[in-house]
Amino acid sequence: MDEYTSTQSFYKKAKTVLSPDVFSFIDGGSLDELALKRNRETFSKVLISPRVLRGVNKSTTQVKLFDHTHSAPVLIAPAAYQSLLSSKGELDMLEAANQFNTTMILSMFSSIDYTLIARNKKVPVWSQMYFLKDRGINKNFIQWMEELNFDALVVTVDAPVYAKKERERSQPLRFPENTSFPHLKKIGIPFEECLKTKRHLSTLLDHSISWDDLDWLAGVTKLPIILKGIIDPRDTEIALTYPNVKGIVISNHGGRQLDSSIAPLEVMHKHREKAGNKVKLFLDGGIARGSDIFKALALGADATLTGRTALWALSIGGSAGVFHALSILQQELQETMILSGCSTIKDITSDYLACKGDT
View (cartoon, rainbow, N blue to C red):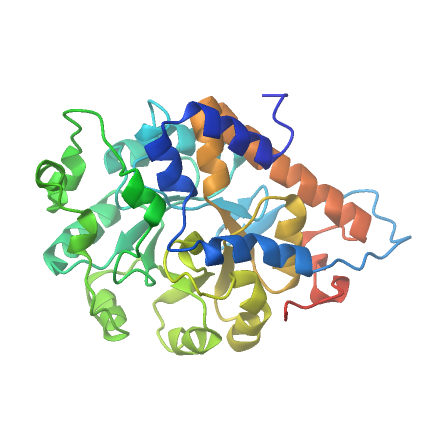
């Protein structure tokens, strides 16, 4: 793995080894991919103002999130169908999370049986869930997640519909013949039927989701709820009124939903102003360097999520690839901390920025 010296090097290699449909499925954004570009470009507009002579002879990237101390403030974002990238799919991703010591968020549309993930996890695993039209499926899913002792429920709230993705339409995602996911069938998701009839799974999504659905959730589970896909600070303010919400992921779905969306980094500080210390805040979208993590934390995030980077690394080197990619981000973060004059994650504040996120 030594030849991969940055997260970008994994991207370049993955582009040459993945089939065009799988690559486009992961890499693409919606419509003109403006939000996808904005997520990345926004980081270059936020500058660090380093302090010197701070006596940083030791530094640590460790951070405690809920009850678990993580090696670094970078978690693995949820992504579906990871067996398209490596033979062990989500199990490879979990192995890397175990080795690196960070939380993995498991997609509802995992290609590996949830039971195998539960059996092999040594770190927190949070279960990502969409609200579906058939709430019976949601109840089945939640009950199973509780039985498997997963640690939290990450509810995606920015995808009542599946946004148009032109790259995906020109190169539709293809699954190997006779692909079958029995664990999805067990909870009532008709995956095989959708494949046969070429019906997109997005037709299962509930277009009418509302804040009332959080009350429904409170009635069916005691799992901590983390809302993923909030971008407007006013929604964070509303989320704080629900006691079962313990965390919020500031995200525009990696530029895969509303194409004219603002970037998470642009509004991160406003979410922290609304939330205070009442909930954990996570930034998702555009992380490619350790310095990006530093900027996100300085603007108020407790930690960040990495999605595409982990997937590119998975496609190249399985669990070893993902571990190496996470290690690159950690090393770059630590270097940025030392150069900026920070010894610990708690030291990172907006005082170290020349720009606080407004563009």
